[in-house]
Structures are given as structure tokens and as C-alpha cells.
Length: 56
Image (cartoon, rainbow, N blue to C red; front, side, top):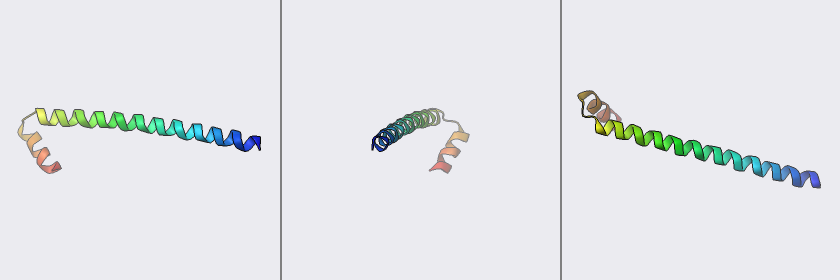
């Protein structure tokens, strides 16, 4: 009985840590995406305009 309780607790802790890690990765990717968007929008070269049209 104690083994099941300990195993359940360890499983919950592992899942919480995985969720926390995935959330950190998601936040980092959103920051990278925002930076890329700012860089593309701030430059007005013809090449970047073509890229923007392709992406849209």
C-alpha cells in the first residue's frame, strides 16, 4: 500500500516537472517568434518584402 502511494507521488512530481519544462520551452519559443517578427517588420528591403508575401 505504501509503495503505491510513494509511486503515485513520484509520478505526480515527474509530470509536474515535465509540464514546467515544456511551459518554459513554449515561453522561450514565443519570445524567439516575437523577435523574428520584429526583425522582419523593422527592415524594409525588397527581399524581406518578398519573404513576407510568401509567408502570408
